[in-house]
Image (cartoon, rainbow, N blue to C red; front, side, top):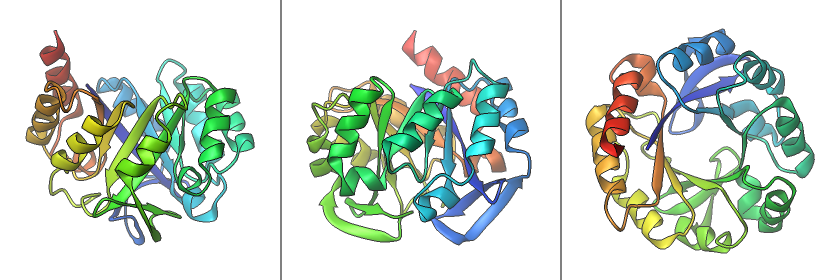
Amino acid sequence: MLVIPAIDLKDGQCVRLRQGRMEDSTVFSDDPVKMAGHWLEQGAKRLHIVDLNGAFAGTPVNAEIVTAIAQAYPNLPIQIGGGIRNLESAQFYVDAGVQFIIIGTAAVKDPDLVKAACQAFPGKIIVGLDAVDGKVATEGWADVSEVTAIELAETFSDFGVAAIVYTDISRDGMMQGCNVDGTVELASKSAIPIIASGGIAKLADIVDLQGSAQTETGAGIVGAITGRAIYEGTLDLAEAQAYCDGEEE
């Protein structure tokens, strides 16, 4: 299982939000490129980047920084989300050297875009499903739909989606532990690999997820995104990834 450090970009800085609220952000670095290098040194095998401004604007806003990170660390796979609502934005990031494109809001509102993107960029499209009480939220988590994450995941089952990033918004940035049960339920009902996100606070959360990933129902869990915990030091990225690597041997 991959332990994936997150870099959330707001106004050119590396921040973390609480429950997706832009007004409740903590700045951790004003040099996101340097921060990406730090996580690479700590053993990161993939980087999760979110353009928070882009998520609310509906179009990429911090694309220059993402490009700079991709150019600085060409051997570090990057998955980018936030404001990617058309094929042109996806093409831009692919050209910039980004390995995976996350489609979130547009996936809920226009599933055909996901299908077209999977055809245009095989193996590179990840769907971001952010949920409140199991219901998918869009527009930077500002709007909650009536569609459940499980229902939406089934829509994409034969599109060729590389993975689903599943975020429990109520846990995100709150350091209260990951919604393991919800993640396992989604993994058990989806043929698409699942990357867990939201609430991971300590190594025990990684242990719980890794243990679930080794069961029949949770076998689809392939990664976990962590943000605030590694920035505040309650989770050691190198230790967490080493644990997962050891379990897989």
